[in-house]
Amino acid sequence: MKTVVSKETSRKTSVAAFSVHRRVPVRNEFLAGMDSDFLYHLGFSSSQDLKSMFGDVKFFCCGGSAQRMGEFAQKVANEIGPRGEGELPFGLKPCKIGKTDRYSIFKVGPVLISNHGMGMPSMSILLHEVTKALHYADAKDVTYFRLGSSGGVGVSPGTVLLTTEGMNGLVEPHYSLPILGKMVHRPAILDVSLAESIVTAAKKRLQDVKVEMGKTMGADCFYEGQGRLDGALCAYNEDDKMQFLRLLNKRGIRNIEMEATMFAAFTHELNIRAAVACVTLLNRLEGDQVLATPEELEEWDERPGDVVLAYIKEELGL
Amino acid sequence: MKTVVSKETSRKTSVAAFSVHRRVPVRNEFLAGMDSDFLYHLGFSSSQDLKSMFGDVKFFCCGGSAQRMGEFAQKVANEIGPRGEGELPFGLKPCKIGKTDRYSIFKVGPVLISNHGMGMPSMSILLHEVTKALHYADAKDVTYFRLGSSGGVGVSPGTVLLTTEGMNGLVEPHYSLPILGKMVHRPAILDVSLAESIVTAAKKRLQDVKVEMGKTMGADCFYEGQGRLDGALCAYNEDDKMQFLRLLNKRGIRNIEMEATMFAAFTHELNIRAAVACVTLLNRLEGDQVLATPEELEEWDERPGDVVLAYIKEELGL
Image (tube, rainbow over all chains, first blue to last red; front, side, top):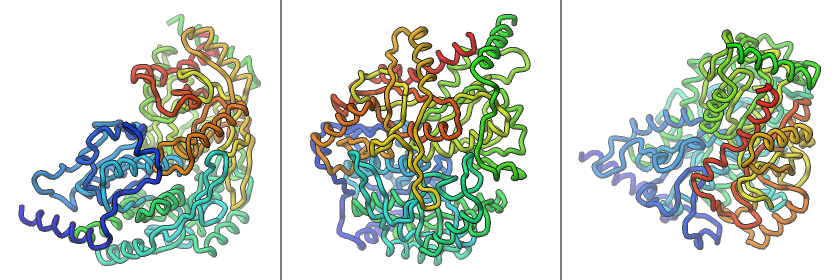
């Protein structure tokens, strides 16, 4: 399989080109002293041979739903495979050595794929445990991606937004977490040059998909936290909502979802290259109802994955 | 099936006894004006016949993992069934009219069961949508329960804690959520008399399970947010951690998990009777490692469900 081997060589060159090889980092002096670290929510531990399982990972892609990420894994396998002899087969599910009731993890060659559930706390558990797993596996030069859906703020439905910076629910550019009873604020910064490279790859390979860049608000609630009028609780009106959405738009926020801010803060804190690509299912400035057909929605749901995969293929020289 | 019929009669009497019939409430004047409300994450809408699906629900039980809640649904079916003719069959999965990639919902007679994922934002989406579904279904006198696992703070591992009050990560007795860019604080109060009734039922029916009451801290993070030393990030040491855990203990907090505070605030806001029952998998004052065997953990994981089921059976006169 000559072609596959040459693709593989080209990938290695390409990855080497953008940085000195750098192990996935952690910042916790206590980890080195642990005999074994059980990654509770993934269901496997550092005593297992993580190096042979995850040592060659270069791209980590996560998104909300297990089903959608399973479909994405299939697409990655179709587009970057077949792999050469001796490579890990498509769809190796590490769940076989762990559990799937919290997260479902797939691996396709250099691409690790997982769902992250909904909201920043669920995202946070995944990021801590996957990052430790990749660190123990001695994986190098790994880029993280979140693929998601969102409500647009002044962009046309179906657009894929690449986040330049995360904002919290108070419209501040950081992620806030109480640690030992004190609020800690961490800047929610993403690598804008990576976002630009993804936009470039998408424009080159996917003519039909509109791709833009902008700030993203990560909310802790789908209803009141995003100014929706259709929750079980709602103490404001249409005018209050529109005033808020217009303020967000003025501050450069182009979409609202529930994970970007934490994801940006965590990866920035560890200096991990990371990007957030979310499709917008509606334009909140024009209403709260999703007016797209089920067929459109299904196609749009695939767009963040398509956009990121365009970049990955570019990096792999495929 | 004479016995079943008499049990059924006794249930109705018992439920009637504790309150004037009260429809599951919402507080949002806009809902009444909507033609149809699509409960996006559950996958069904108010235009469907929710009354025949959910009108007889009296108990709503939720917990983190879909798998565990599926097992709980089976146990509920074993213990409160068989049902009389004309009743909904066991295990009617409303997912058949919706989707399961976000939440898996089961119904067993008067008991509605769902997973809620991990963290308060994920819990929040479920509570908004299930509460609207039960409201549209005209369900009356419904009590909500969260069944979970947690880290104990000064209680022996395996104990089931009934929460008296939720605390946030800043050790304050409320849930804080940015709404339209401003922080809103809601008291995280639970019905202590309900917690007491659950403890009484558990002590009567489950001699081997230790059940206690105390405050619960709901954190937005499993690692740094709970003072753990084994996250990918950790900027404090063992002494800092112990000082924090001892402070929590002094303030009456007996366990830490990731949902109770939002659950308490939401149900209190709508005046829905609610309880949180969590098993403690370890005593954080004695270390961060779970030392229980897999067999013990498996048995402990069932305890919150057993405790709540003891109460439900008491209420149903079974």
